[in-house]
Image (tube, rainbow, N blue to C red; front, top):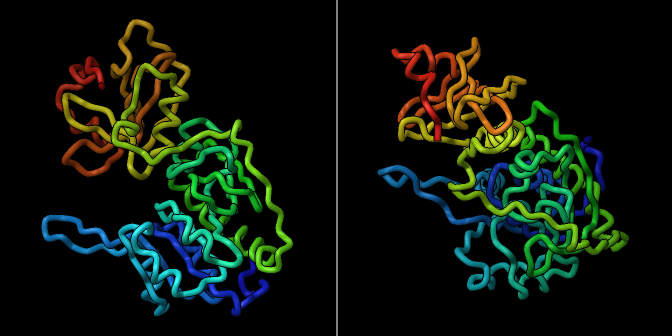
Length: 321
């Protein structure tokens, strides 16, 4: 998309709400072409023993462009500063909070959201992960009006892309964040001049992609090889699928399926060693793990992991949990 030749409207006052890297291309394009009055993002996080403060990706863009950044703990309590900005339009993208009615009703042009799925499919906070985990062949971006429910507002525009067999959550994330930027820029002129459509969602067609919990990241070897492989893809690179090897967490970042069947083995049992990894028995066959990380160790090629094992025969009898 040619970002230098789009319709620009500096008179529309926009407040942007977002937090992670996914929202950065959208925000940067808005700053270049519209009047972004302020940025609302989640509070800073502290990590490590020293409590190092980490800014969100969106906050850093605001600092770099000298734009006001607000970080309320809760929009239900801290909304006065947002209303004082008198926004014409509020745009959210991976912000992480549902907007209260008092904010939803404030902008004359409404509140719109850039969502990483083809709604009503995959409502919720992890649509990219679940598009792959659930075996979808397509996904996309929806620009929608917001209401006080999770991703249930009227659809304005949508644009789809194929999910390739080689895609994982990281590659799909990167494709969708630019697709979201482009679709929003194409859609905004019609929202501003009031010519856009409003299509109500069919709630009977809704599926959900709730924010991932730790338990959602664990592999289940009683599932099919396609399901296990899709889960590895759908959680890579972050947060990473995992299982237990002798009581230690073993993260899996890349895998593939084979046509091999090992009916005599237990689900989760190591099947054989390959030139590029090691196989694991699942419900209807085998999945080969290519990139792994054992608890307390660095991420590595599975073949290097195997080379570090002294008793390989014992390893072949291991059952992952």
